[in-house]
Each structure stands twice: as C-alpha cells, then as structure tokens.
Amino acid sequence: MRPERPFWLFHAPASVVAYVACSRIHITTTSGFSQDAHDYVDTVETRIVLIDGPQLAQYMIDTGIGVTEARTYRTHRIDTDTFSDDGSAVAT
Image 1 (cartoon, rainbow, N blue to C red):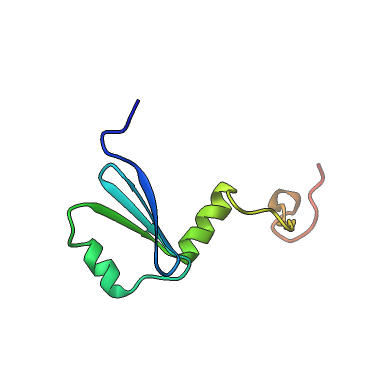
Image 2: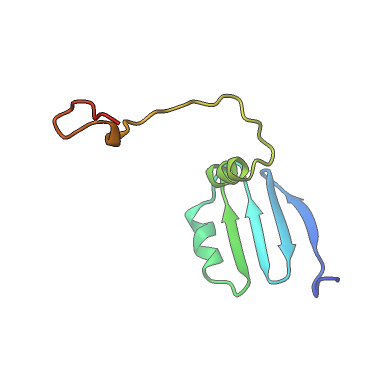
C-alpha cells in the first residue's frame, strides 16, 4: 500500500536530518535546538517533532538500534522477607 504523500529523506546543514511522511516531520540533530526552533514548531500547522542529541541517544539505547551493549552491571537489593523487624534472620 502506497502512502498518500511522498516520503523522502534529505540532509540539511549542521548534521540535521529530516524525515517527512504524511503530515508529520521529524527533525533530528546530534546537538540541540534553539528556543526559536521550539517556538516555531508551536506555530505551524504541520506537526514537527524535534529530536535533539540526548533524546536521540536515549531512543537508540531503548530500541537497541545503532548501539552495542558494552558492559552490564549487576545490582542487588535486600530481600526484606528474609529479615524480621529487629534485623535478625527469619527461619524458613
């Protein structure tokens, strides 16, 4: 099934990539957006989503796209069912 509107990808200056599909535009940068950019997207009819560097990095980590797990840390918590209120071990 073909989308109603064309889909294209273009590169803009300052390492900005914009994906245009239907009535939404995603603009991604590895740095950040000015307050003027945030103010502008609030004034236009087309939905524009600004994704800055930290958001992009978090999306990449959350989805596992473009990243490799380098190290895993195991953490522990106290099992409160093992101890009574006075701190002594509970017999199981």
